[in-house]
Amino acid sequence: MRFGIQISSFGEFPPIDEFLDFVREAEALGIDPITLADSVSTSRLHSRDIYVMLALMARETKRAQIGTSVTNFVTRHIMTTVNAMASVDDLAEGRVMIGFGAGDTPLYSVGLKSSSLNAMREGLIAARALLNGEPVELGGTPGTSNWRKPHLLIFLAADGPRTLELAGELADGVILGSGITPEVVSWAREHIAAGAERAGRRPEEIELWLNAIVHIEEDGAAARETVRPRLCTRANHNFRLGMNAVPVEEREGVERFRANYDELNIGAESPNAKFITDYMIDRFAVVGSPDECLDRFREIAGLGAKTFVFAMSYTLEARRKIVRFVGERALPELEG
Image (cartoon, rainbow, N blue to C red; front, side, top):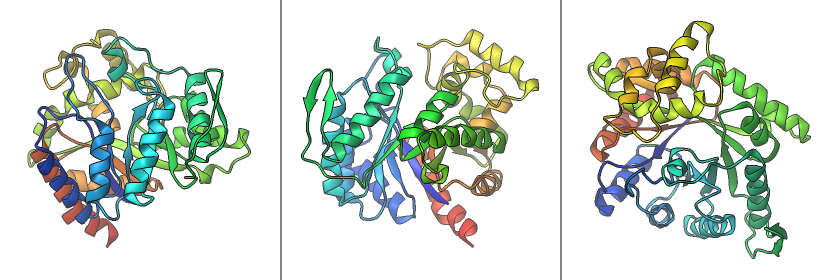
């Protein structure tokens, strides 16, 4: 199994040279893929432009796959997104993937709505056609592309039954943020397979990336408390879609979380965190002491997915510590 990272927003912008040094170190430690989240905040821009940064990363890396995990179909036109990513792929000499999602907090926080299932379907079809140099109709206007990049993989971040089935039907891969328990992964695979079979595809053709948050401290109990605010938007996004793969005994806690969730009050001090249960921590995160996290990594490696791509704490230094633990201890032990 590959271990990759999903780099989302920072509390403060680190200097670009420091960020690129982190990316180079991650690749040297065996981290692959290295991806960026395309995100804005409720009140401020807290991430540099994703395509500028990916272009720099393409020049600074040699082996690791790079891309978006994820962008959306709303804030940029699909032709703009495809053109940017195909250009980055030229710089990276064929190492790029595109991850799309419906859009969640990054859209709601600026007064936009996430994509409907039909809009995501149209976006996936258009993206593949444009990357293949095939004619496409967008908004009633025919378009063409000079790109010929059938190797550039398109992923869909899918958490609910319908998006999982759409991914099985049209995407090259799925970024699964629904959880990392065996029950969740099995449930997700059933829906991916249903979509694939409807489209005449073999389910094993669709690459599965598991996605969770990783937070490691010497004091495992303290780590669990630290990570609660980081899980709020992820839990809200998933449970807004229903009680998918939630055990009966945990549903009351999920209902309490949803009833009290404040969409516009997120971040490290979010009051939503007090409604995050231990079940939610274990479903959406690898968190605890180094030994506890290593045990969870072993469990994840046994789930049969090709890739585990994880998000981390807000600061660059905290992310660096986690990446070093994964590269220097976890990967050698798992490979051994």
